Image (cartoon, rainbow, N blue to C red; front, side):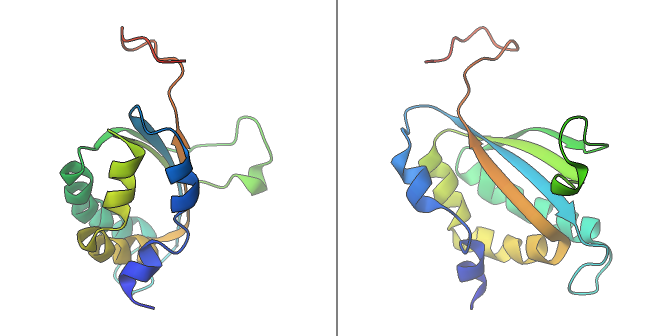
Length: 141
């Protein structure tokens, strides 16, 4: 399998494409890091930092922006063993189509090698905004 195939292995293009694409989308990223990077070059966190430095170019090329990141400290509600995450990020894209274009680009495939080296698990949920107190812009729902 080449790296670009690995990039889209779990990408659910069919489900994303079936959603309305009439508004920006925020992607909720949940990450759990490996103790050691698969390539042996530092920790999983180190590999993730290398990934981030490369991936930001692909994100920006599609009009996306990192809105927020944070370190997961504890499961406040839920089953801890089902929710073992180390890091969380919100990344906003102008459309679902732009997210798919980013994820399937050759530039992202090169960055993805570092994500795979560093992440033991990475889940991304597509979020349609229904309320935002931080902006004065009403949502469509």
